[in-house]
Amino acid sequence: MLKGSGYRTKIEAIKKRMQNGLITYDEAKKEAEPILAEINTKGAEIAQRWGKKHKPLTFGYVMR
Image (cartoon, one colour):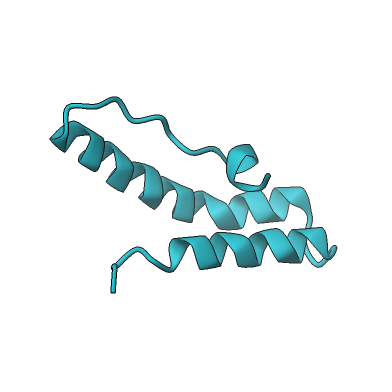
């Protein structure tokens, strides 16, 4: 099993709680910040390894 396979689950859980009104947009953004930072760090490492440019994920993009 992949080490980072829980990222999607964590982001989806934050998104559902925001949609259900349990947390505000700003609270959801704060919760997702460390997860997105880790995803973007790993993405940049992989992109560098393959000689590609990494396009970082943003909070607005993953909440769509």
